[in-house]
Length: 431
Image 1 (tube, rainbow, N blue to C red):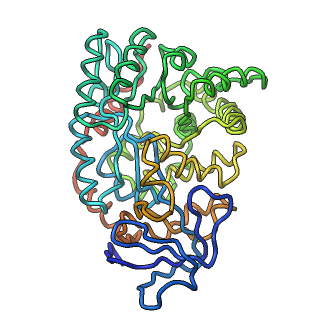
Image 2 (cartoon, one colour):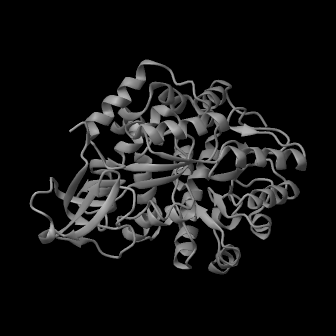
Image 3 (cartoon, rainbow, N blue to C red):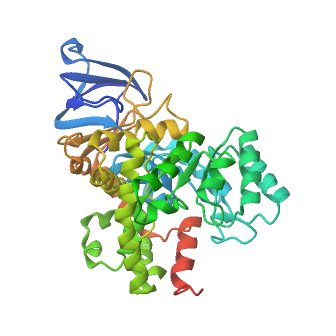
């Protein structure tokens, strides 16, 4: 079954998790009608003449959502193979990603549904020349956001170089266009960003207490600020872990690298941070435990926590890196169900697509993934993807691997790959 389109059929797994419930359903089927879920019904009520796709030993869940990606087309089929059917691109060339969003919307087997932010809105100097956009003045910043809004972006991403005064202007202009604002904070603190209405924060950036040993009371001060202002978190712990352990030989033996384009493997194996000092990498490694502590406490306090990865940075296999981030959530103290909610229904709510994605229910888009085992009890089973359903189309991993390998014949020329190559080949960063 490479890529198979059936007009109306039933999926019959061992159990179904709808994206929100505490427990899965057994003896239940999902009826798909073209691109949508038509019904979730007891198996005994399933019409005998309806074509069935039996998924023995599998748990069926909503398609996974990666809320922090910098997209390249060579990642698309791999993401689907990992069960990721929707992504939010949080930094790319505006025109390029808008066009790619349309391509993926028309040809679902090529990659996931794309929600996008367009360029990274940076300060007067831009760090990423293709993914980013320099904004030297408040008027330039407002004009850039207006341009992005007119192009139809799904959200706005603010970046490192924005000082607090520029940051406030960007949030104000974005909200005039009813656009969600998320940010990678450097020059603006999380307290300053929350006070002017930022909606989300990426990487736990400038959540300074999360990066060090801290008392519960210190955590609580920041958590209360985030709760008060309704700021959601997209932690991307996995990217910090991989950058801190970039020299570890085990990553080069990861069998999932067969899904990664050779150019991206070159970037990973030669990325500039490999030349950082050992002390710098050691500090990065130590911080992972602190981040997990803060993430657990934030979850216990009821903060809205989504899930993203920062693919395709080093050792983040497209799609499959979501499994790694989920495992980190569970290691931090989440239940497997809570972790999976972050990657499905919670992410859908953060991204504003909860009416169509993130759950298995009548009327929702038929983006589904079947996994051998039970990831609700053993999170590692999320990696045992048996089949992916993208807008009702049945996709086998073998078929998706063929698409991936077909892309290896040419070097990717997308903005993300070109920016990463430039950074990689520039050698060590000088301060």
